[in-house]
Amino acid sequence: MSESNSNAPKSPINRRNFLQRSSTLAAGGMALTGLGVDKFVHAASSDTIKLALVGCGGRGSGAVDQALTTNRLGNGSVKLVAMADAYEDKLLNSLSSIRKKHHDHVDVPPDRQFVGVDAYKKAIAEADVVVLATPPGFRPVHFEEAVKQGKNVFFEKPVAVDAPGIRKVLAAAHEAKKKNLKIGVGLQRHHQTGYIETMKRLHDGAIGDIVSARCYWNGTPVGHKGTRQGLTNQWGRKPSELEYQMRNWYQFVWLCGDHIVEQHIHNIDVINWVKGTHPISAQGMGGREVRKGIDDGEIFDHHFVEFEYEDGSRCYSQCRHQKGCFNSISEHVVGTKGSVDINPYQKQYNINSQGGKWRHRPANGRVDANPYQQEHDDLFEAIRKDKPYNEAEYGALSTMTAIFGRMCTYTGKKITWDQAINSPISTMPDDLAYDEANRRWTGTPKSQPDANGQYPIPVPGDPEWFKKIVG
Image 1 (cartoon, rainbow, N blue to C red):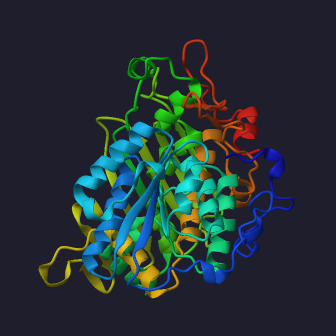
Image 2 (tube, rainbow, N blue to C red):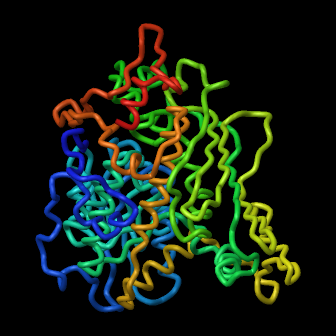
Image 3 (cartoon, rainbow, N blue to C red):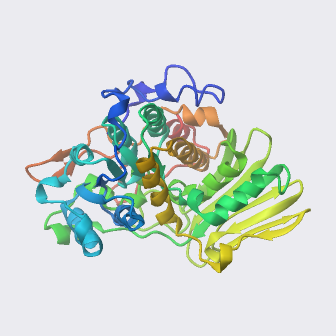
């Protein structure tokens, strides 16, 4: 599930050849073309679409709920037929919850409930459409396998946690296009009416040329999912370091990417959407002021990044996990003829321009569609009507932008996009495995605690840390 440093691309990726060469970027030249293109498209619109879930946590269960809710449209049936997870208890809890709401559209007997290192392959094989919702570190491998098997995919953001993972996703995205697969990514703002209307006006020149932007995900911390002692009490044995980190995936870079990647990607993605591209250089700062407990893992609690785009415009990005501070989840853009402020949680999409003010309001006083549901409605419509639909590329580029930012805050250095996307540094363990007999995950995370239970934290400005983070 990991990619060694020796598998880095042999020639650097630059802005001119980046997208054109995406099919060759993943290391090892993955064989994704085992079946003919005509095998991959779901056939008749009246057929039942078989759905599999890989990653049975809260977001995965929610995504399946939304996928099954598309049955309300009356365009044919969607049925959950297989599930996979690292842990049986999470799978069974998710299955029970989904059954309560969608009993007639759930058929997951024990022989289609999969746990283990190859569980995702088995679940994918049972389905027409796969929901990939494990911790983000696993998504590149899972997406690659789904494309190899010729399956349509909905996968949650972020799509990876490091540059090797992004290259793997881009290569698989290229193959997915060739196979006419439909790929959705959980960046739901692209399916949110207020954003769509606002973006259209910005791209039509409502505020002129974009000169600067800022975006925020400043909020409260995401807590841990289990202490070592709590897991010991629950399991009747002490968890290994790998098991502890997997259960507390949000606290570790190889699993979540840090909160600049796992959460703040939404806001960064909006600015890339505005600009129609990704930044070319960045610098930033960050650290840990309040995350100092024994179960607080290794991620930072605040990041600030200045992203520079090719036209010289800049985006100032903030994300913070600290209680009692200024909170905002929003995006703001300044142009030569005006500005726009977007705060979806306050239902505000406000343009102030030389042509006057505009604010998005739902048509005829109605409530806008739930974007989390709309993204599934759009994906399943594309599958049934065989419409082109592939969000993997912009999902990967926005994820890479967030990873790019993390590299800057961890190192304290100004870094170029080319340096970031060509980084050979994989965060994944090299020996991840599952012991079927004892039902335990085995492997060695690259980040290990010291005698006091504290993890090594990046030191901005330290050349050794730069090598560890960027290469």
